[in-house]
Length: 383
Image 1 (cartoon, rainbow, N blue to C red):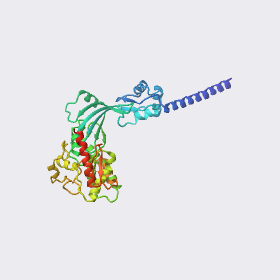
Image 2: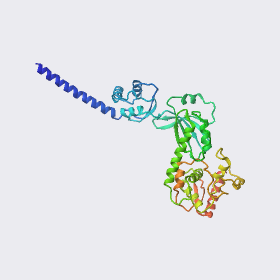
Image 3: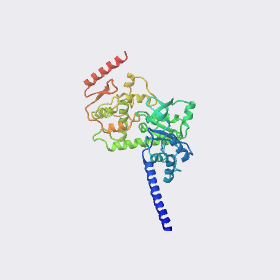
Image 4: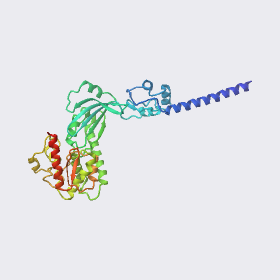
C-alpha cells in the first residue's frame, strides 16, 4: 500500500512538473509574442512610478494581454526596478519584452511634448509640438517668436514637464551670428557665449539638449560636427580641384549653400564655381556682396544697389579675384560634399529659371538669353 501511494505521488509530481513546464513555456511564448496594440501609443511614466502603476497604465491602454504576466516577467528578468521616467513610443503589436526594453533602457523620451527652437536664415522661433503616436508625426501646439519675453502659461506648463524634450534645429545657410543670437535668447539654455563662432564652423543640424544645457558646450558640439564632416569630405575629394585647403572648400560650400536651395542642383552649381576658379574667372555672386554689407547679422531685405556691386570690399566677388576671405554662412554636409565632388560640366553661368531652380549655360550668349527669359517671368509675376 505504501508503495502504491508513493507511486501515485510520484506520478502526480511528474504530471505537475510537466504542467508547470508547459505553463512556463506558454508564458514565455506570450511574453515574446506580438501584443494586442492595434496602433502605436505614447506611454508616460512619472518620476517614482512603480511597476504596478506602469502595468496598470499598460492594461488600461490595451498594450498587454496580461498585467500579471508582464509583472512576473519583469521581476523574473530582474528589471522590475529599472523603470525610467519619461514618455515612450510603443509601436503597434509590441510584445511584452519589447515594451520592457523600451521603458527600462533609459535615454531621451521618444514621444510626448517637444520644445523646438528653429533657427532659420530669416528668423528664429519656438515651436511646441506633440507627437501623435498613431502617425508618428508632430502636431504644432504653440508657435512663438524668439524675441518672446513673457511666455504664455501654456508654454510655461508644458516646458517644465519632466519628460519634455528640447531640441535646436539649425537651418543650412544660417550665419554664426544668427545661431549665437538664437542660443543667447533660448530661455532653456544657460551660460554665456564668449564670442561669435567663426563663420562656417557650425554644423547645421538638429541638437537635442536638456533644460539648462550650457551654451558654450553646445557651440563646441556644433563645431566638432562640422569639423568631422569637412575632414571626411576633404579626404575623399575629387582630384584637380582649385582648392588648396579645407578652409577654402568651406568658403566655397557656403557660397553654394546660399545660391541654391535645390538639393539636386548643388553639385552642378558647385561645378560652375569650380570652372570659374579654374578659368580663372571672377565668381560674381550676389550672396558674397550681401555678406560684405550685413556680415551675417541682418537680412538685407532688398536688392543690391549698383554702388554696392561696384564697391571695393573683400567680399565683393564682382571686384575681387578668387574666394572671399571667410565663409558667408554655415554650409550643410551636402554643400560641402558637392564642392569637393562637383558635377563634371562646362557651365560657367546660371540664373533662376522661374521654377525655384536655375538655368545653366556654357557661354555668355546662352546666359544672356536665360537672363532675358527670367526677366520676362519676373515681369509677368509682378503684373
